[in-house]
Length: 251
Image 1 (cartoon, rainbow, N blue to C red):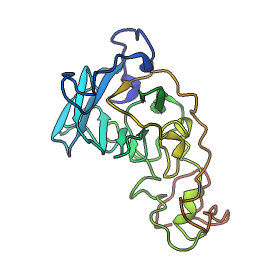
Image 2: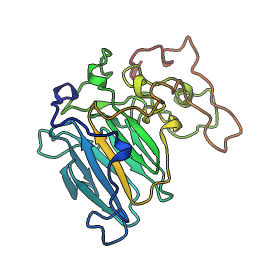
Image 3: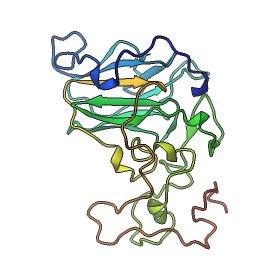
């Protein structure tokens, strides 16, 4: 099942920011911890975290627990009966900053909000008119700029012009570009990160989740923090430069 198969359950009564937060973040309202309060118009969406140990439908409230920092995958069920953690993800860090990321791949449109700040993208990328740059399996479009992808810049190789580091300055893949700047679509799409979040994060899944106002604003990579030498675009004549097309490491 893919995003274009979304059906409306109920009209949204309000934008994601107005969803009622759970006291102290815990779903029972009794203990401290971080939680997700779900809303939206996506049927059959699931979450998964803790390496698949915690999985369930993206409805109601999900308690992530005290001190949670990591990734929550949001997707449909795969052919193996488990939701994917390599498509759309909600990321949090120990400082409470969070983002919706498509850096691994894309499965569903999601917008998450906390403390007046929002991240994510409600655009249906499968229906945007630009084909996925990889084969879609179980509703996952793999992002070529993500870890292990053909355009992943990887670690800094001591030369700003070296391949693959030059791809840190390249624009997002055209399939993911409509959500750049609002959700992570390439390794230095830092405009997607917001926060810090305390208590409950309100996550809306589907195409009726509103806008952050930053969609499509990420145009290219930025310098890696604390590096004296800036990143540089890939040489325009190189087979391994980004020319708006997909290529492989064997080219």
